[in-house]
Image (cartoon, rainbow, N blue to C red; front, side, top):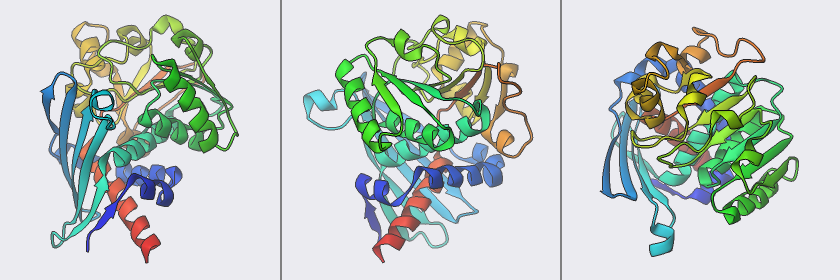
Length: 322
């Protein structure tokens, strides 16, 4: 019988450390297969809503998944529902047996957080201690958890356009991280970004949410997960002043609006996108070369991540239920 797996069960059964290690195996052993997977498709029921569909097969795991994930910005106000939703179907590729139905929002937050954690482990300075968080939703929580898994973070400053969201983020993440780290809610973006070693961007903005002049020049690492061609978390100057690394180059070139804009405006050239995570994990390309370099990791995600993360979730939950 197929398992139905909720957000709470994912939280209970799968650690961030385990998910980071799971995705590292993906990039090590299947990096050359990422480009063979179908690109995601999406429809927009209205200007504030989008529905993504993402299928992928892992021949190595013998698993296939289809993720339907939704983003309805007006849900909280109009219907009292979360912004993110959807379901992921996990199948045994040997016989098409249905293995699990998994909450897509929780799965996406976990695997995207783990992806950022992996990139941060490889690219950021090892002595990075101060983190800025811009955007304080569910994804930001998982990104911060992942960064704190791979770096000895000492302080976090969080900013959201709605101050109450920043306050709740600080309270909840202080509890999540058991009070080990100072987390402060900020009333301005500038104060959140000041002297930060690592910056986490987790918004759905169509306009840049940071400006290069607000960042510390020298040794900073920026993680940006903004997706869709019409969205731009990053300003072109920040992109131009950083060494650029990505999860999957073809996806970023087609779907990351801030990178697309930087290329079309002449702020950068394609050759400045130096490596993807597969090349870094395999040691084919060099990540950070010195403590004073500025680096950027840009991710739009891809469906093979969901196969690996959902398989990990399935195995852990199955073991727990026995």
